[in-house]
Length: 489
Ligand SMILES: [Ca+2]
Ligand SMILES: [Ca+2]
Image 1 (cartoon, protein in one colour):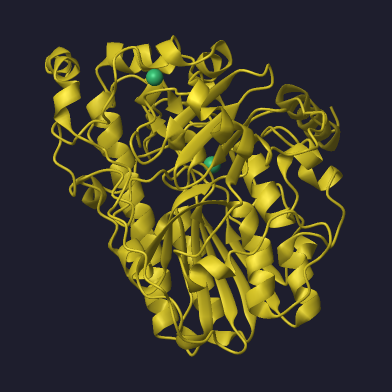
Image 2 (cartoon, helix red, strand yellow):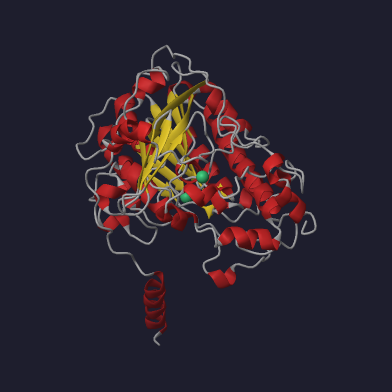
């Protein structure tokens, strides 16, 4: 692998084309929505567009998502409210944007700032739904158990608690930051013992007994670690999976605020130096296929249940993931790789395998669920319903999708454009149709000033200060102190 790597770098421009776009196939949907629909919201963690319905990676294998997409509308330009777990999930579940709440980081406890009763899992209970949650829905244990009818949460025991623990252990651990793995795959346990399989099994059991429901299943993968069972690695040939296409000096037309988010002196040189780019791309794809297999189990159970024809399935990711694009690894950027997420809505009797190119964001989940459910929309909810686009993906649409990374840094996305404005006023503008990989920043083009102006009109009017973060070190100390007190120390 290491020997091969210089060659891979040299030919990277030829290795593959990750188009990020599938052919447009907007089809007007017809039919009527079930009179009393249930909702099954499936959230995958750190999933980018490397899924077959979006064709973001030519080799990605996600048959379950293909099944959902064949029954639904796949949104090709959906944005996460924030390209990071806690602020994204808090925003789309509560209905309040990060720029309104000041929740921009993972170390902020949203329950201190979002009043009770506002989050959709609690609100919908007031209108005759049972709400069930399993797995990672909010950011790990950051949730109020009493705001669900029933909630099932098992810690992701593959995720080390500290950097010191990030070494390959009995169950394996593969982060993009670590050196070469000990083996091609390290997860040795039976699949049924893994946390995502357990969450899905819990949901499958619930489907057998429940009536009108709002069920959310949060799947941890493809969040790191990527050591899923061998059979998912076997789907991708070692040493020859396509790498993302990179442009040399892509960051040269990006303002300093954007370069800081890319952090090109951080992970990417380390990945190159360790010679593990191929390994990490393969492992990410394996984790995506593992996630898809869990989704497949859930969809199969739904199909075999009494709820098949009256359950609206919504599949989303919470933020994107770079694997070297713009010399970046991970999330926390405002480009398509970081901010865009998969979103598929399958509405029985209405949708049937179409794509929607309009820019939208996950803030639509709350109001769209309310509209399909026929329940009043609470005043605090900031998103707008995309039911018109689910009915007709080619309908006229003015509102762009919005993603926010820390205070006052936003991206606004339509079918044609990605506009980024950082807190210091610097800008980027990409033509999504002509330049889907977002290589050429057009923000300085005088003839495009009107495009920027129009999009800037949609920038959030409020940019709340960041609420206080919990210091994980202090938290640990406090916990240790508590434990010591229990032991009588
Ligand atoms: Ca995430
Ligand atoms: Ca560039």
